[in-house]
Image (cartoon, rainbow, N blue to C red; front, side, top):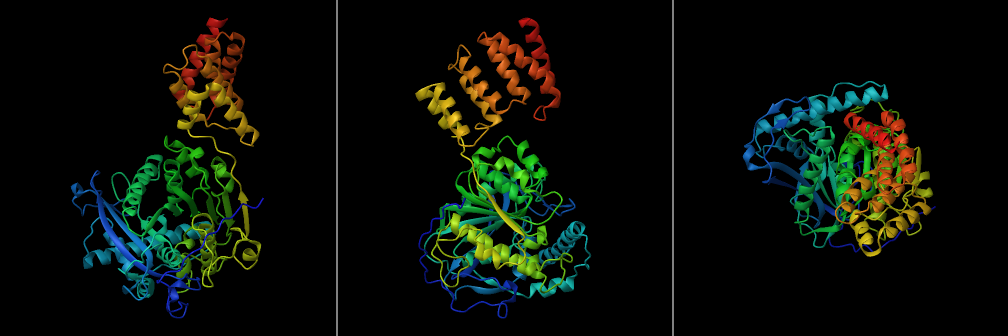
Length: 543
């Protein structure tokens, strides 16, 4: 089934380019088809005064206490935006690299620049070692001489260029190497009419993000702070905000969308979102509710033993677009994919032409954003097509060389949020909750309400709304219908059936609980012990 596409008119303002950018006059951009806008760039240094600052941590965990922590949690926000043509100062890639030395200490010393260069070398070497481990290939060491070649490259963004008047859709790109790792992506999207913000999420106690459920939540808090600062800018359309993310930041994006429906789309650019490990981290968070994620998701991925689209099964309420680039790698979708042209095999030898793969992925990303966030009538200089195209248009795909396969898993109907379900109960009783359940199930949603919903709704009903337990018994009839292998659903159906005098049903489901409890992956050891003891006690009473 082809998903409907809605287009609107894009008005081209005075920021149109006056000079065509090509691989000859701006080689860092390769053969990317840039848009009609000149691009400005600025860095915002700011603090979250509600939290203490953190010391700098390298990837090995070594701390550098180079900041007065009482000033607040440090944020370096890198912003690219449509700008007036000819305004602003030309800069080289070195500008982005040197900002790596100003993540926690906002000063600008020669020592910080040298530290930033050394950090870039070490991180590039580290990412390369990870890459060749997956690819089974080899690489040479990345050296200071290699870095010097990159530092001299002129970039497309103009420092402190005058922003164009008007409001533009927003893309937020969290990444641990901001802005040096993803600047090409940000400049490319800004040239097509987006305001793009890159920042580095941090951990609780240092600048290094923690790979844990708590780490994801702290990173989402950082994201929300950045989003608030973005909303203060005059040139942003806060009704059109999307996320692009690589590596674990793609799961940060999913967690952020679960908490904030202001966010309208997610691109997992070689992210860990379609992995069992990161889905496990997300599910450990009490804030993560897949039923809250109804925004479209584009998942670009390569061959990796830990990555499989099947792990996104919980995201069933979102349209999921998948594009596989089998011969690329996770970090080749960062600037490194383009840097192969200057430092061959910078991350290791790929079977793919990494520059070509990078360019194709970005053309696909732009099509996705244009059709989901900013529908446009495209001009001659814009990637994309006309009203008859979808994200994975056949003519577009036939022209590509690095994309192996594409497919779409369409969303199923999502349940109303818990506030609406409370309202429906107050206006129409529990019959309304059952009616919605049956409607959703008839539309293909075989588990209309999440497991966590039953716990929250049960607690709400218990407060002066269900004195005879009948509503809660009916609630767990629905829960059992959706999750018959859940020990918890069986237990509560048994318990409330006993409360309403349905003893035969109670005995049946207490026995079910005892047969399921030892192997239910949702239960902790203490919960297993509790359900076992309570079930045995109640069965003894019933018998």
